[in-house]
Length: 439
Image (cartoon, rainbow, N blue to C red; front, side, top):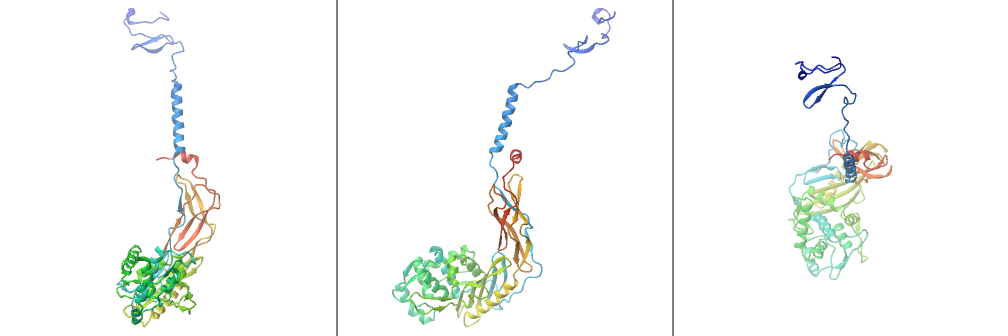
């Protein structure tokens, strides 16, 4: 029968055969067929409830806000040049002495040469460098300042006959003599006055023993592991050190402005109008020598420490040297060795350019993936000597934002310091970097 269903329960006993045009539907667990009405063939579209949409939006806004409110890493400087520069050739040969000890050191570069081992030897009056250094740590002097005026002790005056009998180097203190701190330091370091060394010790610590304890403590802090002080003047042969240790000490002392001012003088001029007395450092003003101290006793031999400055290319270098235990009748033998060493060291120093002014030599890293190039404000030269490897680096605390052309750090190359300027404006991390950062 056309247009009707045939079902098994309708008496036919056969499976239902759908009429033409009918489509299967699942209903109540049975497959049925029915007329195609054109409405049930498309699945229903799922619709997000309004509260779910709002929740998703709020979560997204929260994530964005949290990312924007998170602290931004501090910017850092990175080097764009190779981390080191090596000078071609073999190391220079310095005229080091056959006897005693010697060491030559260039600040920012290291030891150029040394000889004589590391056995401690008497320092003689070179010990007065530590006496002045310790005193200035407790009683600093401003540039050009005379400092407090003190009267010499009765004990010091009473010791004078014995000191004269032993032939010690002296200022010649007398009862009631008053000395400013600066004049006392000048007498100590320029004419090597033993009597003033003991006065400074008492002015500071009350007794020689207490002051000597301070000297030894300062030596430990400076890494002078082979040095022992037993008196503030160095006359006692128990005060011993090495050339390498004395280089460490003089390097530290020369960074104290008042010390550097005093040892640069060529003569001691007393306040009472008496005659000037020449400094024992005969090289002051020659070979770039700007300071130092001599020493001599029969047991110590001739000793000499010196500081010299030489400009190499665009960089001012500081050379520190020490000569100990020279077999000579005075400190002059050690000074002569020092003269040869400083001249040879200055000749050995050379400079090589590694970047021109305006070259990109570093960059600022904002910590989130952004960088800003930094240019050298001047030509970058590395100072050293043949065979030496010098490390390069960057130093400074760059701002988060800065205009183009602003100085934001320093490129270091041994003793050289070169300003870094921004090639572009520093703007801090970009919005995409701040939103998409992980961790």
